[in-house]
Length: 156
Figure (cartoon, one colour):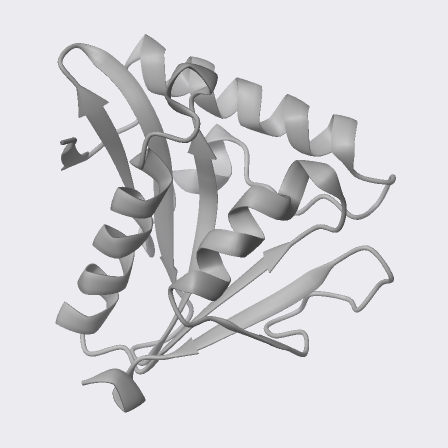
């Protein structure tokens, strides 16, 4: 069981996990295909960040970017390596989906990459009902980037 709470990004643990996330995205992606947000990018008013904790250890981070009143985007999903395969990512994704529904959003979008570093996340997204689709917002379509969408209105 994880305690999920809104995070103001001031703690060392969340900052370290976000640094790990950015480094991992750059190490696993071709130049020009990384759209992960840095700390300042996550501190915008339309973005809510949550962290999942087990005791005093951070297990996962995830964010919801409100693209509009009805459409959201999942950002910065990252499980701490010590918690890989222990349900932290699923708990966070379920929390973000519930938050989007509670805000009246009808669609969630996400962008991710291709290759082994992204496969566990893609399996989780597919298991939660996300379907592959085209680019959204201002994302470019590349051979590396993949896009997934979840219609929340259809699941009510």
